[in-house]
Structures are given as C-alpha cells and as structure tokens.
Image (cartoon, rainbow, N blue to C red; front, side, top):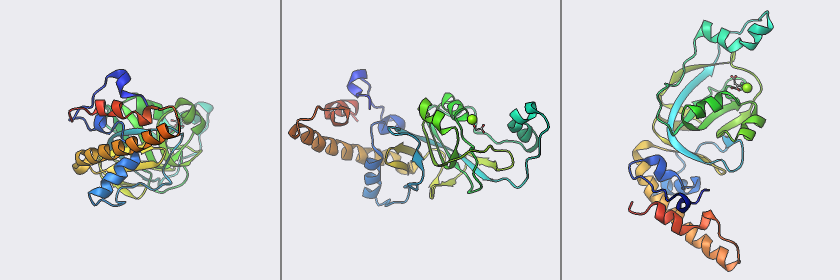
Length: 251
Ligand SMILES: O=C([O-])CC(=O)C(=O)O
Ligand SMILES: [Mg+2]
C-alpha cells in the first residue's frame, strides 16, 4: 500500500474510486452488514485474485457470455490457425465493451458456465488495462496465468484454463445486469478485490458504505497500531493512521 502522505493525495468526495482506495474488502463487508446487506453481494470465494497483493476498486462494466452452440471448424493453414479468433469473429460476430468507458472501471464477466475456455489471457487483459480497466473479474477461466502473474495484471477468476474462444463461448450482452460468482452485478456498481476475495457494492449504497467502511478501517488501524507498538514492530503503511486521516481530511 502506498502511503497517502508521500503523495499528499486527498480523497475526492465526489469520486467513489478515490473514496474506496484504501478500504479493505473486509471493511466494506462489515459496512454492508451494518446497513443490513448481509452476504448479499459477496462473490463466491472461488473467484480469487491470481496473485497475492492484488487490490482494486472500481465501477463495474459488465459482460455476459453463454456457451457456444456452433462448432469451430478445422483450419487448413498455419496462418489461419494463428488467426482463429478473427476467422470465428468474422463469421459469428463479437460483442465488445464500449471504447469510451471511464478510466477506473472493473470488467466483470458472467462466463455462462460452459466448458473450460481461457477467454481472458495475458494479452487481452493487458489491452483492457490499457483501455482504463483497474481490474478484471470472471467466474470463468483465465489462461497464460504465469504471464498474468509476472505482468501483475489485476485478474480475479474462478479457474485457470487452456483453450481459446472459437466454438466454446460467445458474448451475448455488454453493460447489462449479470450474475457473477453467485451475485448480481450492474454497470456502475462498485467492485473490489483484495487477498480476501471479491465484493460488490450496489451503486445506490456505495457512498454510504464508503463512509461506514472508512470508520471501520480507521478503528482497526488504531488497534493494530497499538499491537505493533506493544510488540516492538516497525510500523508500516497499514497502521499509518495519520496518513489515512490526512487523505480523508474534510470528508
Ligand atoms: O487470445 C485469447 O483469447 C486469450 C489470450 O490468450 C490472450 O489474450 O492472451
Ligand atoms: Mg494468450
């Protein structure tokens, strides 16, 4: 975690991404409990970050997939085999998220429960990050996971997979209401991930939840800071209460 005082950065009360920045998934889970949203939007623990230390919050951009009902066909040349995606998409189309999504979004995909398919891989997840995504969440598979981990690309998925899209999966809708990891996700809902797992915050309560979660985080930081002192441990950014207070000052 970067210490906020080192950058003199301040939270913007009108920007949810900045309000959530230092919150842990557990703070937000407790805050959701506090307003009576018990377990409603906790994504299945099977949807896990691919590497340790991953942390992101952002507004959801959604994709809904179903298993393909048309086969891919045998290709005749190496060139065509390398180009299998294009050949399949040219025949059957490929729905994509809009190009003008605001930076700071989290792509959340309902994989449709079909066969193993590495819809996401080390290349297209990097392209998504280049287009402003701060995270990619799917209840399906990701492949090239060694590279995804090496790249520190923020991907949370249910399983690792090996195969490619043609003949296995189709995107049928983007920016609609979906189910992912057993919970509802709508475009604009806040989605967060850290080492504990993934959580969704319905947009209409996202501001209120951020306020409660901030208080929960700070109360816990105070207590952990005392343990650090009692145990003679060197403080780190996770117990830098002053820095977090300064970041949220005036809000
Ligand atoms: O090509 C794909 O569909 C997924 C993939 O391996 C990548 O993006 O690296
Ligand atoms: Mg790949």
